[in-house]
Image 1 (tube, one colour):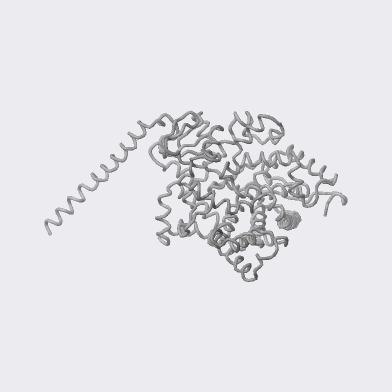
Image 2 (cartoon, one colour):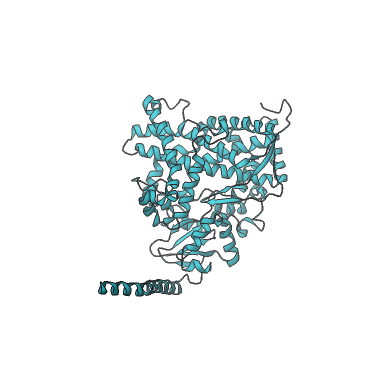
Amino acid sequence: MALGGLLEATQTQYLPLVFTSCFLVWYFHLLIHSLSSPLRSVSGPPLARFSRVWYFRQVWTGRFPWTNIELHRKHEGPVVRIAPNEYSVDDPSAVKTLYGHGTAFTKGPWYDGSTNLKDEKSNLFANRDIKTHAAERRKVASLYSMSTLVKMEDAVNDCIVRLEQRMRDLARSGKPINLQWWMQCYAFDVIGSITVSKRFGFLDSGKDPMDLVSGLHDFLTHAARIGVYPDLHPILFKLGKLAGKFQSAGTNGIIRAFIFTRKQIGEYKAMNKFLKSKADDEEAFLPRLLRLHHEKPESVTEEDVMRTCAINVVAGSDTTSISLTGVMWALLRNPKAMAKLRAEVDDKYSSGEIGDPISFGDAQKMPYLQAVIKEGLRLHPAGGLPLSRIVPKGGATIAGHFFPEGNIVGINAWVAHRNADVFGHDADEFRPERWLVNGADTQRMDRYWLTFGHGSRTCLGKNIALMEISKLIPQLIRKFDIELADPQMKLETENVWFVKQTNVIVEIKERALSPNFSGS
C-alpha cells in the first residue's frame, strides 16, 4: 500500500510536467515550422499561424465572409493566412491554376465534413478525387443541360403561379412578410417538382411539411464547422448518440430528404412509370435517372439515383432561395435599379415579347434583367467559405508566393467579387450597368465571377438556379409593389457554408395593372 501510494503521488506530481513538456514540444515544432516556411511572411491573425482555432471560431460565428473581406483589406495583399497551413487567395490569375480544367489541385479536406461515411461513394460535392469525380459527373451531366431543363419549365411555371397566389393573399392581409422564407418555399417546391415530379408542399400552406429547412440547416452547420477539423468527422460519426445534437441533427435533414426520395423511387418502380416514352410530359430527374439505371444498372446504381436526387434537394433549395433573396434585397435597396428593371419588363410584356409566366429563353434576352441577376449574385453569392484546394506535389507559385505541396489554398467568392481592380472602385456597390459594357472589362469580370464555382467543379445545378431566378424576378417586379418594412434595415446573415439572409422583412401590395396589361 505504501509503495502504491508513493507511485500514485509521484504520478500526480509529474503529470503537469508531462503535459507541459508535450505542449512545449508541440509549440516549438509549430514555431520552427512557421519561421522556416517560405510562407512565413504571409500576414494574418496571429493565432492562425499556430492553430485552426481562429478559423473555427470565425466559421462558428457565421460571420466569416465579412471577416475574410476585412482580412484582405487590412493586410493589403492577395494572400492571407487563415490557419497554420491554409490560405485565402484574392488573385484573378489564380482561378485557372486552382480550378481550371486539367488542374492537379484536389479539393481540400474541408469537404469531408459533407460525406456520409456509410456510403461507399462520396456525393459529387464531397468527392475529392479528380478522376472518380469526373467519371461520376459524366453519368448525369446531360440531365443538367439547358436542353433538358427547358423541358421541365412547366413545373417551374406551376410553382410561380402558386407563389403569386400566396403573394396576393399575403398582400391582402396587409401584414409584413419574411421574403427569404417565401423564396425558400418556392425553391423547395421547384426542386421537388423537377427532381422527383412531386412538390414538397411548401407553397400550399407556407409551412415546412417535412421539417426539411431546419434539418438541412443543421446539416450545413455541422458540415461547415466540422470541415475545419475534418479528422473529427469520422470520430463523431462513430460516436453517434454520444455526439448528441452536434452529429445527429447534422444528418436528420439528409435522412428526411432521402426518405422522401426513396418513397418516390418506390412509386415509380412499382408502376414502371420510368419506362414510359421520353416524349411523355414526365421529364423530371427521377424518371430519367431510373431509365439510366434500367439500361445500365452496373454503371448507374439505385444508390446513384438516390444520391443524385438527394443532393439536388440539399444543394438546390437553400442556394436558390439565397440567390433570389440577394437579388431582391439589392433591388429593394436601390429604387432606381428597381424602376429601370420594371420598365424593361413592362415594355417587353406590353409589346408581346414575353408571356406570363415569362419563359426562360425570353428572360435570357432581357439585358437589364440579366445584368441585375449577375450583379445581385456577385454581391451575395450563396457560398461563403473559400473553395479550398490542396497544393499538388512539387508545390506551386500562386499570387507571387511559392506554396509547398500539401498546403491548402482557396478563393472565397465574397472576397473575389469585391476586388476593386476587377470590378471597379465601386465594387461594394450594386450597379448592374457594369455588366452592360462590352469588351475587356466584362470579360475580366466574367473570369472572376465565381458564384457557381469554376472549371470541372462548376455547380451542376447552375442552369436550374438561373432558370428559377430569371423566371421569378420579372413576375414579382411586374405584379407586386414590394418595399422593405424598415427602409433603414441593415442586412443580417448567417454563414453555415451558405450565407442565408435572416431579416428581409417586406411589405407587399398588388400592383395596379390595366386590364389589357395584367396578363391574368
